Amino acid sequence: MTPTRRGFFLAGLGQLALAHLADAAPVAHHPAKARRVIQVVLNGGMSQLDTFDYKPEVERRHGQTVDIGLKATATGTPGPLMKSPFKWKQHGQCGRWVTDVFPHLAGCVDDLGFLMALASRSSVHGPASYLQTTGFLLPGFPAAGSWVSYALGRLTDDLPTFVVLPDARGLPYNGSGNFSAGFLPAVHQGTVVRPGGPTPIPDLAAAPGARFVTPDASADGLHLLRAMNDRYAADRPGDSRLSARVEGYELAARMQLAAPEAFDLAREPARLHARYGTDRPAAGGAFARNCLLARRLVERGVRFVQVWSGAGGPSNNWDNHTSIPAELPPVARQVDQPVAALLQDLKARGLWADTVVVFTTEFGRMPVTQGGVGRDHNGGTSVTWLAGAGVKGGTAYGASDDFSHLAAADKTTAHDLYATLLHLLGVDHERLTVRHNGIDRRLTDVHGHVVRAILN
Image (cartoon, rainbow, N blue to C red; front, top):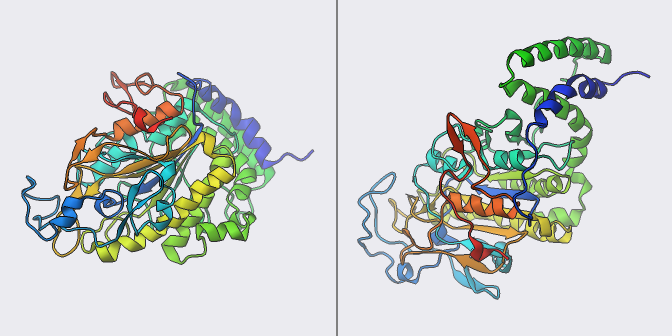
């Protein structure tokens, strides 16, 4: 029988990878409501005042200069109060206020559990984005998806545990730091997939024209590589990088068979493509395809999928400094229909009962103008929601002040969000620790509580 390249990968490299995987058995502190997560991340800072946080006082005092204790904003001098230029309306049995920039999501509010006063410790993109994705302001800490991968392990052997679907226009602020494994074993880092590109997963297959990459050549090289790997691992038992690389090669061999089917959106019916809006131009269609792909991935056993809206840099994201009326509607349209379709699709496919969807952004925006009709960064309050497994739809926890400037009642943070998410996954956030540099590190640092008000 002629040996295959896949066979050599699995036989020649598997032992070292399996030895490493045995070090981290899945954690189960209590019965889980959820098995997998889809996190939608709005890069740049979504304006809560123009989407979900209705403030009659801002509407009434539009154009007035009001003392809210603000001497300067993150990037300039504050102007007068500015009401939302969009129409507010109450939706669903819960009566949740939503503006008309989110017509599709407005129809889903009875399925959503809102955190209405989620504050950040920074109003600067870099630190706030790290805090949103890792629980810390500084780089070098594991992403939430990496912690989930480390704690719970794989649901499938053929696809990564943590997959990142970036905006088609580029990576977000902080780049890959948002989905790094930090000090966890490197195997738990996010795998970046670009389904719209010529190579969705870089280096998964041999390059075209690589005529010397044959089964025989691969066999010889892998035998030598295995001997070198064994020697390296024996000399450096505490270094996870090699075992992560080995498992990466092993996973790549399996993905050569599994990934093409998982990423083939043409297998989905035309009516479903229409529901997501995958045929829309530019960034809107690309985001819609990523949402559809996210459903396909969790359906096939990927534990944590992160879907990004917005790249780094001005005018590519939710960082609407110049004009809320002109800048917010286009990015809102990009996510509104696809995310609503994703929620409906999870229900239709029987995935709703064990999948959590999290909708996050690094901070909110100011109630006062910046220059003309834009809004500056505001770490004082923002809006996040969860949906799906274990989440009590039509609920809300927390409230900002009369101007949506600061969290005023039942303030939450990223640590509370992740304590709640881990709880749904069956993990006690205070017991999920890793010793690093003499400190028992947690995703939630030394903070965080489970927000039971939005849970069943």
